[in-house]
Amino acid sequence: MFVSDVGRTWLNHPWKTKSRLLTERSEIDELIQFGIEEVYIDTSKSVKAPKTPPAQRPKPVPPDPKGGLHETRAPVKKVEPTVAMESEFPKAAKAYSKALDTSKALVAACRMNKRIEVSEVQENVDELVESVSRNRDALTALIKLRHFDDYTYTHSLNVSVLSISAGKTLGLTDAELKTLGLGTMFHDLGKLRIPDNILNKPGKLTDEEFEIMRNHAALSAEILTEQNLNVSDLVIHVARSHHERIDGSGYPDHLQGEQIPPLAVICGLSDVYDALTSDRVYHKGMLPHDALKFIYGLRGSHFQPDWVDRFVQSVGIYPPGSVVELNTGHLAVIMEVNNRSLLTPLVKVVADPHGQLYQRPKLVDLNKPAENQGWTITRVVPPNEAGFEPASFYNFTAG
Ligand SMILES: [Fe+2]
Ligand SMILES: [Fe+2]
Image (cartoon, rainbow, N blue to C red):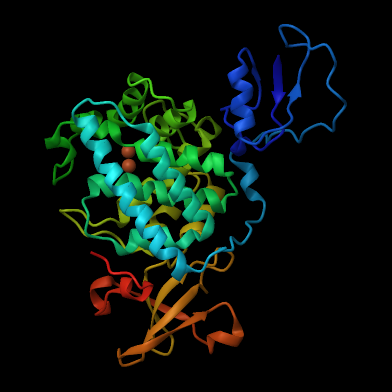
């Protein structure tokens, strides 16, 4: 039968387009997996008309003729944690280290052309999704606090965490988050087939080297296809299309606007953010708000403006784990982002205006006038200037 509309925003279904001729039972299962219970069927386009005509239903809202990811314009809901940061943090730390081990094993397997253990990666991704569902900020804080591991292993995991968290803010279902998590874990596997002298070149790449480097996205998809893994096509789309940009300047297929699978857009945003903020051998990473400013500059050219806005709402101008100075000179560590009010996160005030650390740091919601004592954030303190390890205020030792 010909499905003319899946009745959901195109962000929330597994296909690139809303309509398609279904030939296999598995395609229906794919929709069910995404939580879709009803679809619109066009009997005139179906190969064999169903016995009973579909019931009369209100016509779905036609897509925005201008294109773009218009459904994201609905106001973003505040994502409320169901578990406090302090109790989620140790669980998130455990899930993160486990996933990091898997990430290392994944790289090793690909280097030796061994089979990828998808079920293991999926299991880790499920744990990440569960942690983000309980408290979105525990894992994102970890990304910020654990700055001692090799980028080769942490990058894909960090992109996965950032994407799941952004996807949560965007209202994706758990099934969608798990697909996104898996795709992002695999997104750069193709880099393992790029010669080391190009991949790790300290200076600028030549045009020719850049061309070779750009192959990595298609190679990631190729590895997944070659291995004939039991993963949805969407996972492969994320890997192949994470460098596509809405103005067609991306690669490998020069897709434009809505042609880019939505999950690949989320992966693309997280990818740029993690690359900019990570410390590498040859340069220091940018502070989060500087990276977000940079990404904001890509609004309308590389990424659809609404999606950039949503990404910023998810990551927060002051991401968890950042150290900030307040208008009184007190120092505070960001605990949770308020995605409806980015300038007033939940913080722990850890030091007095002389930089003296408190024995008992106080948890303060800067968005609650009864708590905030007129405090506002005036400055981000770079990690090396803080004079203390912000991780210690999460009851967690980085190391
Ligand atoms: Fe990439
Ligand atoms: Fe990447």
